[in-house]
Picture 1: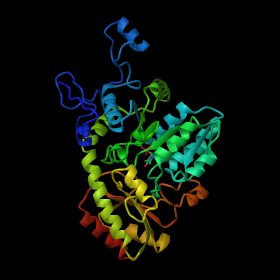
Picture 2: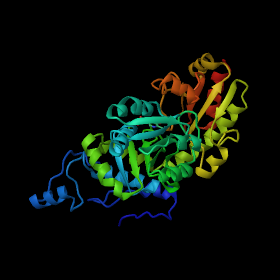
Picture 3: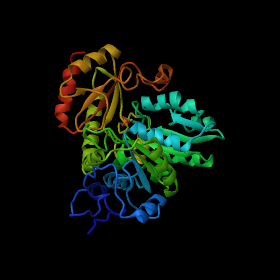
Picture 4: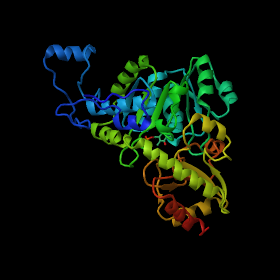
Length: 396
Ligand SMILES: *Cc1c(COP(=O)(O)O)cnc(C)c1O
């Protein structure tokens, strides 16, 4: 019998069971269908599959059962109608803009944003005649002033990368829908465990599953989750034309990661709040950014909109860039690496690393100072993580 999950079930139950169906031989886990193509029973079935009159599989770029199982799991966790697995978070972001915009359209994007997202809008989408305006999406007036008749998408991260600025999804969705624009939330930092943007009015959620959803730093993958079933055919068609799809093995790994997503997120949040509190009291630290600290400018909104502060902390050291370098070269346990959302703790410097590709002016406007350090807090024992940071901080 198939384990059916429904909306009344808890998130941990959904993480373990979502997307799982019956397969030949009764495996508990969806098999890895490592095949590029699928044979038809006869010419008539082939024709039916191509016409879309029968659900089934033709070619792995179009649909694959292992990929589909993972897609169903994520759609269920986010409360969406469908989702489309992609080769990376950037492939998922590109898929959204290529599907929803055409020459002459306009996009509003959050100022504090993943570096490659801003570069994609400024360097790639402009080539196709789509213009972008970058605003602080935590300020609804800035969005309203930027809205135009041809605005098709309002795209933002909340909490945003790397400043952890929080934007009000519901308020933005209400405004966007008055203007006929779609709201797209990059939910990478929260995962569906901590924040469900579709329930707050967003139309589309995108994830870099490379981060928390897979959670083990061994896969690059992305996903687009659609609230409305009506959007699905055009998105699936564009995914098939661009071809940036996730492969069956990576989909299998991501689906395996999802099983522990809820317990991992709990531990990420628990460790992060303790570390943020420790850093805030530290004499070498100027400022700490973490949505569940009372000092965060949108603390109340964070509590209302999310179920936890997540696993990313940013902070400014009193000694600027030099102090940052000393810290990064002397910490223990924390590994000097970009990316985030894995079980292991990482430390990095946005101005020279993840956000180096971002336009310099835009970076300054987004509040990404040269001395800003970003932590991705893992699931190790928090006392060890604090000890590891102290080994670096005391050398400053
Ligand atoms: C990593 C990241 C991306 C890009 O995802 P890839 O899987 O690296 O392509 C997009 N948005 C956010 C918030 C990210 O952290």
